[in-house]
Amino acid sequence: MLVTQATLPPFEKYVSKIKGIWDNYWLTNQGVLHQEFMQLLKARFNWSEVTLCVNGHMALDIAIKALGLTGEVITTPFTFVSTTNALILNNLTPVFCDINPRDYTIDADLVESLITERTSAIMAVHVYGFPCEVEKLEKIARKHNLKLIFDAAHVFGVEYKNRSIADFGDISMFSFHATKIFNSIEGGALVYKDKSLVNKLDVIKNFGICDAEHVSDVGLNAKMNEFQAAMGICNLDELDDQIASRGVLAEIYRKRLSAVPGIILPEKNNNVTRENNAYFPILVKEDEFGMDRNKLFDILAEQNIGARKYFYPLTCDTAAIRDKYAAAQIPVARWVSERVLTLPIYGKLPVEVVEEICDIIERASKLYAEKC
Ligand SMILES: *Cc1c(COP(=O)(O)O)cnc(C)c1O
Image (cartoon, rainbow, N blue to C red; front, side, top):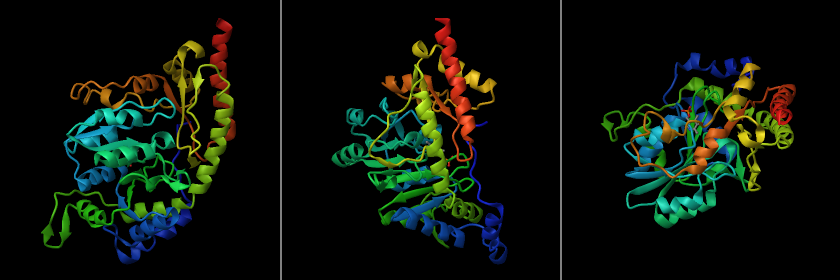
């Protein structure tokens, strides 16, 4: 039992979608399926502009290049390593901001104190499916003339005050990786409103080539191919079911685990008018629960339950970079990272398994109660 399971459309549906590729021999580079997928996304979520990419990380990378970021970028260490790597590989300095204890997104109230003359942007992450404090961040970005980029890898389908979560900030990056709530095998998309970015992003994602004889940018290869687009088109039909079943499972987890001493659940945000339950994180408080996160992780693993320590370690603490940037004041992120465990959740996960996982966690805590 892994933490997630990739969504697949019916086999025949995918096969019939890719059949045309054998007629036109067009496998990648803005093919018809690429076009169809892009239009479908725009129509479904009411998005103005969409740029499809080979994966989420490359989407983030070309967004940074197209926006021309320089110097320092205020970001969160409580994320997948991709967010931080994208900054560093573009010669930017990540300035790590702490997170809030309610839903583990960047603490918007701390961002302003980290702004310097070198700051060009804020790169925030909507973790687990929980939106950042988007309005506060937009206000800060506007006031200080900073770009606001959202790593929206976890929030596909999420709505905030009845608006798509991608309506906020200058640009949002979605990941369509196999492990995400929606996938195009690998894949990613940038969503934004500024029409002047469309051509720029298309050029950068194709080596910087602007026409057959001209190269205007030092670009790279970040193009989505036709097989990916076909998977995306087919999987879009699965999204509502996927979100609905996750909602049911999350409710069971929430109901049962909120009663367990020492298990902390993220706070519900009433501004979220459509949630996706991409992940189900819990925090384990050792003093009340009776054992620490790592011990509970081991107990679950013994029963073949593959929970994950997302996000541990923090990206600023990895061997790759821990000595390279100024020591960050991030007590909440450290506290959460040492206690967090994400439990299995995906559309086809049987209700009984969720109940069983709750049983195991309850028993683990009772074990403690009896010992006292
Ligand atoms: C998955 C993920 C990415 C990277 O997306 P890929 O499509 O795997 O390249 C970036 N940021 C976060 C928070 C992610 O979860």
